[in-house]
Length: 151
Image 1 (cartoon, rainbow, N blue to C red):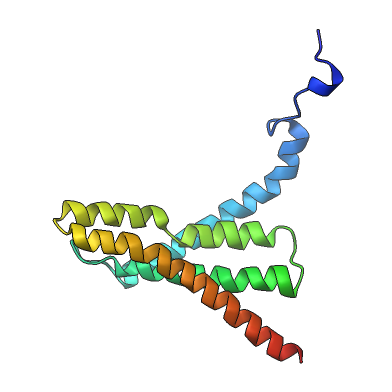
Image 2 (tube, rainbow, N blue to C red):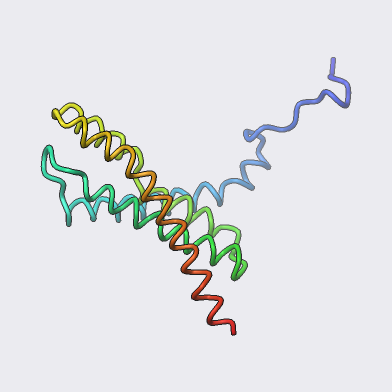
């Protein structure tokens, strides 16, 4: 017995043709994620956080990544049309792998466990504020710079 026309369930992502359409996106996100995570790891080697110390590296990586996403989104949405795989590769993959809000949460837990709950709470509040500020400032600055170049 089949469902009436209006009640049919749409195809899911397990359908072979859907998978073929999604495979390039999954591939570029995976590749970009590897690149971004490698860059984040390199930052942690160049600028290690001492045990019990304030996680400046994580904060810096998240601020830098958010600033870059502000620039990137203005460029690919307002300035020029990008290839359909650029956004998933760079935005989701590279910058998603580079920024590390999961490590941010682990850092907060470590500050609490290390007897520094007030620093952990400050870090908890400051990170999203400075990350969003970085996106806002970078996107605004990009618009101003590119607007000046178009004249």
